Length: 523
Picture 1 (spheres, rainbow, N blue to C red):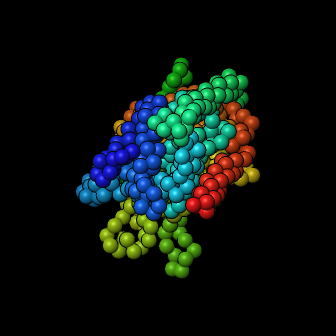
Picture 2 (spheres, rainbow, N blue to C red):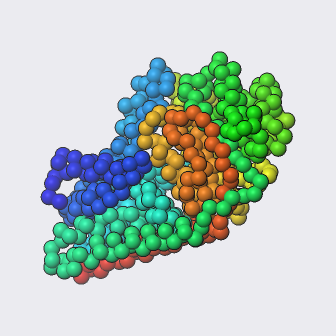
Picture 3 (cartoon, rainbow, N blue to C red):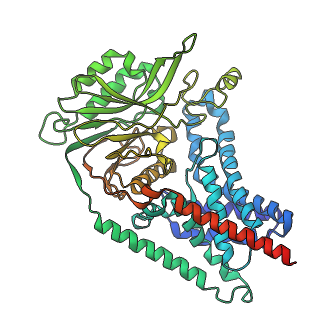
C-alpha cells in the first residue's frame, strides 16, 4: 500500500501476471485470493484528489499489463509462422497488445479511485468499476473480451454454471468482488470492526454458486438428438501448409484419409455419419475454383452425409469497376458435391484477417497475417443453417465464439453451435486452451451444445451445460465420433442478457458517486 515509483509498478505487474494461473490450462483459481487484494491495496495507497486518480490508473495499467502479457504471450507465435515477413513485428505485437488492453484496466482502477470509500463498500465499488471497464474492452474497436476476469471462475464446471445465470460480465463482477475481499482483513478496526464478514460472505457466495452448479449438472443429464452422428476431423496440419497452394494435393489426401478412417468393422468410417465437420480455412485454395476438390468430396461422402467445412470464398463485387472480395466462410456440402449453404464470417480479426485503414497501410508495405490481398471482408449477418437430419446450427468461425451475448441472433435459436477454428497459429501454448474454455462457456450461457473442429487446437463436442462428451487434445491428429447432444431450455442469461448486471453496476456507481458528492458537500 505504501510502495511508490517503480516498486509499485513491479508489484502491480507481478500480481496481474500471477493471476493468469487462474485461467486455462492451469485453472488454479484460488490464486486470485492472493493477487486481487493487491489491486485494492494499490488503490488504497494512491493518495487523494486528482493525483490519486492518476496514481490508481498507473497501478491499474501495470496490473493489466502483467495480466495480459502473461495471458496473451502466445499471440507472438503467429508472427513466427512466416518469420521473414512478420518476425520483426513480434516484439511490438507481444508488448503492444497487452499495453493497449491494459488501458481499460487503468480506466477501471481510475474510476474506482474517483468513487473510493472506506471499509468493505469499496470492494463493490471496485468490482463495478472494473467490470464496466472489462465490458468496454469487450466492445470498443470491435471488442476483444479474451481472458475477461470472469473467465477465472470458468475452470470448475460447477462454478462455470454461473454463466447460465449472469453471463461472462456477471461472472466478472462476482469474481472481482469475491477475490478482493481478503483485502479488508488489513483494514483498521475503527474503519471496519467486522473485518471477517466480507471474506465470509465471499466464501458463502462461492459455496452457493457451486451448489447451484452441482444441482444444475445433476438435473440436466446429457441427452442426444436421435438420428444424428457427428464426425470431427482434426488434421494437425502445419500452418505453413494451410496457405501453400502447392500443398493442395497433400492436404486433400490427408483430409480424405482421416475422414474415412474406420472406427469399427465397417470399411468406410463415414458409414452412418450424418455430419462430417472440418476446421476453419481448411484449404490452401478457393474451394469453388477447384472442381477436382469438390469431386473428391463427392467421392468421399456417402449418401446421407453432409460436410460442414471452413474455406476461403471469393466473389466479384458490384463495384464499378468490379473487384474481387475474399471471405472467411463455412460451406455446407451435400454428398453429391453440391454447395448447399454458405456463411461468411461476420466478426473479423484485426491485423489477422484485415488491416484497419487497409488501403493506406498496404501502401506503406504492411499486410495482415493471412496475406490475403485487400484483406478479408465481413459477412452481412449471423445466419442459422439447415443441415438435416437434425436441428439447424449456428456457425461461429474462430474467435466469433468469444463474444458473450452476441453469438446467437436475437429472436432465433439454433439446435446447436459449430465453432470452426484454426489454432495452428499459436502452437502448443495456453492460447488454444483458453479458446476452448470460452467456447464451452458460450454453450453454458445459451443452453446449447457445441461441436468444435480445430486444425491442431482442441476439437470437442460439449453438451449444453458444458460437459465435454468427446475431445481430441492439442496437437493431436485424428477424428471424433460423437452423437449430437440435445439443447435444453433457455437459461436466464439467454433470456435476459446483460440487463441484470448492467442495472447492478449502474446502481453501485450511482450510489458511490452520490456518496462522494455528499461527502464533498459536508466538508
